[in-house]
Image (cartoon, rainbow, N blue to C red; front, side):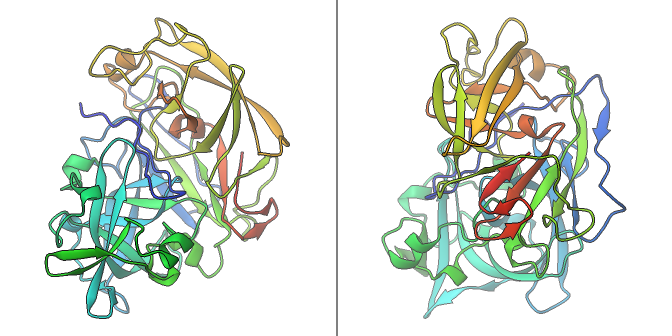
Length: 398
């Protein structure tokens, strides 16, 4: 079984991670019913279910996105798209695209992008215009990245770029984090950013790209439900489940089905971080559906031993271990206690299930609240600069 641990997108404030986590019992599938009948602003989610490829790694949250040639009804719906609250924008492998997209240009040169991840992988390919439909919301015109390692000449940062969906583990990524663009003002004002390029034939050189031309979060372009969203996934027992189903609901307080009550909002900084205190140590932390585990440093030696090679980034305690941490914003208020469990990765991986709430792995520098944190909760993401009943973004709330 191919496993993906921490897949951190190293593009300024961008974080995208895929690891391991979740929970549920036996060979069951569980689902969280949508808050009302399937309204236009509800996008279905499956974790290792019908919207994912059959060879998916553990705890992969998948959605389907409709992508069209701009200004036409020539469209296709693509599943096995990783839902990621830690990145920004839509990225689709060229191999799965059947519709024509228009290349974005600066002068006579094609715009391309190199995005790099913390596990050493990267994605390279042209930036093209598409009409994107999320759930049954109105279509939005947005620049997307077409992942294509054969485009032009690979820059050094993308020398090992993903070549196909099978190798990456998904058909694409839907980045639904706080911010509008995947790079922002730095790439708009600095040509030597190492992210955006202009290509003529096989020659590609660094370039600045205006905000409107950068890969963007399509949900922020929706005409109504554009101030954020929440994800609802069911609780999963420690023994795991084969799959779970849930919903992403666009908008916060914009419709009858997306109100926010009985949740606490935690503001985030410009790096998409808040604060977690765990074992006497304070971490910069984030909540990321694209991470398939909880990643952190144990508070004491021997508490959570690592697994043997080749799974040495994962925890393998002899028994399920219950832990407690505290989350807060950078002002220290509000503050809330979180309890969570970490199980033996190898034992869980070798079970018949694919979704677990107690998978965790090592991260020396930050606390990554990955997909296991979502099970049994409503997780709200408030977009940067947009207001709702929970305040002004960026914030998480749960």
